[in-house]
Length: 133
Image (cartoon, rainbow, N blue to C red; front, top):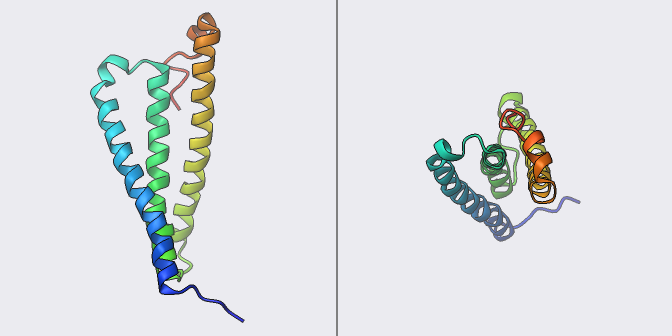
């Protein structure tokens, strides 16, 4: 026996995807503006470089939520069919984006920890060249 979600449940669930994704993109845009303004001053700072890379992973993940998850939940059907280019390639990028978020967040945590606990080691390990990926 197949159970279908009602229109109200689909609308609520898709709104719960849409609202945080749009808010997240707006906040990432503000962060992007702030990072762009300070690029000449802080462009060689390891924290700054890691933050820029983390921001792009966040933007990629949020855009893919809007492209895949929101319409899929709203319509209740796989509207892209079995298209590799339209469905599976973006899903692969979503995996890369979420792994990037995890890794860059961990990297940023280690960066800040080493800066405050071992400042002399931080200068040797976290050079601007070593933090660009």
